[in-house]
Amino acid sequence: MRKISAHFILDGLGNCYNKGILTVDAQGTILNIEETDGLLKEQAGVEFFSGVIVPGFVNAHCHLELSHLHGFFKEGEGFVPFLKKVVENRLIEAGSIVKAAERADLIMHKNGIVAVGDISNGQVSFQVKYPSKINYFTFVEALGFSPERAEKAFSWAKQCVQGANDMGLQASIVPHSPYSVSDELFRLVAEEAIISRLPISIHNQESREEDELYRLGTGEMRQHLEENLLLDTSFFHPTGLGAMQSTLKYLPVENNLLLVHNIHTNQLDIDFIEGIRSLENTWFVLCPASNLYIQNRLPDIGLFRTRNLQICLGTDSLASNHQLSILEEMKVIQALFPNISLQELIGWACINGAKALEMGKWLGSIEVGKRPGLNLLSGMDLGRLKLLPKTTVKKLC
Ligand SMILES: [Zn+2]
Image 1 (cartoon, protein in one colour):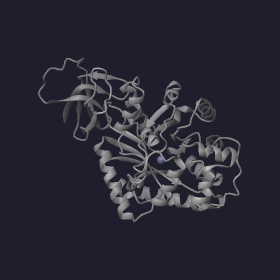
Image 2: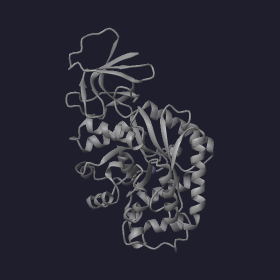
Image 3: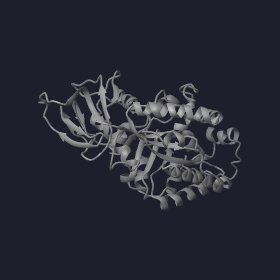
Image 4: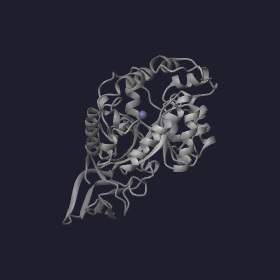
């Protein structure tokens, strides 16, 4: 049993304890939260840390299996060129993929990340996730824009889910994006999701090009499908609507849904989403560092806050990020939106992701009975409770 204190403890639910004391058992379960109202007297056995204690972070969107692509791509090249390069470079010898994934897993752990919503297109990363100290929820992506590939793509995804389950990993089948999944495949994924009731995710409104594909049937995305992926797209007829407007209807309203990126999501899009499904089980995952890396553009975070959307944070993969750190994602946001409180950011970084991945009962916030992991943030502006560029994170348990 340990007694731990710091200048401030943020429980992740909006409460701030000034020099509170946490009692945790050897496994990290919170046994007690004691308020001292800042009047912490020296007590035998209390470890005091300089800084702010927050719950373990949840990385709501990552691709561990792309970790070997770290530093491969130049920044700011745009979305479709990025896709092309990932397709060209993702398949290398499995041993190197595993080694890079192992390194990335250890770094995430060191960076205070306790849970990850991780995308898999194959089974290669399962051997890393299975023994990891991090709690993984795996989204197995079904990929196939050609309708005739639907059955094959779906059965491959099912096989991957089975492989994950055999290792004790939780996994669901999800559509990659509107521009990589046919209507037929969307239907198969949806049927499965209705049965499993597990969380699902989709890359949402990440590019203008996907909208042009759906609205007009033209542009760089269509070119990518035909020239880089060598697909015959003659079957495809534009819907006259945006990519999200054309495909969200396939995703069952009962399942938790993680909409990832949302770079181009505007007021009308949010109205549209709200018209189709409840915002209560819909999460908007922001990956700001990755968005800046690929497209030098961010989602309309101000709008998302005004609309009270449930925001989570993700790192995306090392192919489009310098690091896998939720703290660094928060710093990007804090620098651009200095008025967002640390409490609010911590809610995005912890409990929202935990709830989206259905892990909220046991992590995501500092509450008696939970085992959230505890992170110490040092090098902060303690007077205003703000992150600084020099702020670091250290895992306390
Ligand atoms: Zn992604």
